Length: 343
Image (cartoon, rainbow, N blue to C red; front, side, top):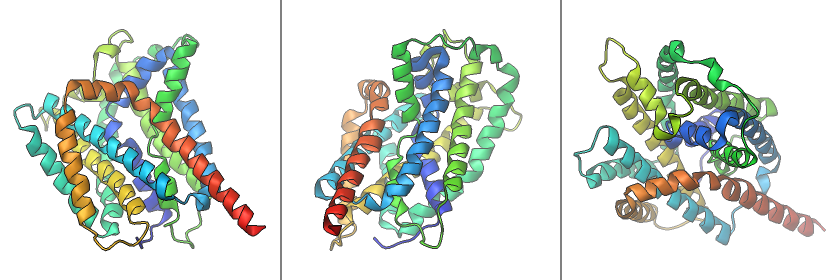
């Protein structure tokens, strides 16, 4: 694939790829797993991710996928797409579309994704721009919940157990899932568009402030004893906010989240497209047709409460294997090979 992006476009895509589908639910999972100190764990994880991005920036030239690693990533992204679509459909069924057949909604979402996947790369690159204004609108309306927040619920600290720290850190890191997308897309950034560590710091600060704000609002809004019984707490907060121009603010933002999620979904497909078409292939559209058909039928098969609970229970384990260990192995192997060739 031949295309170029700016560093701003790279960070915008990474922001929506990372926050996307999970941002209305990850706070609940993180706070339940980490206990009292979960919010501290999140900011420690954010600092680790910043250092990881700095390392990626130094080593991205060595991130070249081979035959096996390419298919490992494609398969992992494929599984992630299925789980993501199942979670999106499950959430829509609970909140707004309980009487709509699942296959209708899934088909419509996949048609949007397919259109983006067979369009020019610029379509996938520029789609996140349309959601940027809604980020500010979303944060603005959450600020209406500030009078109901209780800062005292952040304390006392130092009460989480060792097991809670381990799980909380895993969930904290998983809040930044999709970081391998930086390595996939970095080589397409314009050479004259210099990437500085200051740029990475600004990006990581923005996403940390956004995600941390959502988590702290949930932490201070709900009593610790009630949080384990609430799913999608962000939507519950929006539901409780009363405004004059819309009856159900949560429904309005649920559809905004749907558009946000579809863009995140399409960016994962875009990563698959880049990896699959790493070598020139005759047929451009057929692989995307096959991919979306497989996602459709797999999502229908796994659309049940057990799959959603499995996702919630194991989502935190995705980050380290595919965003830390596998990229480190690929970079080490290619760097070692280059060193041997130089000798």
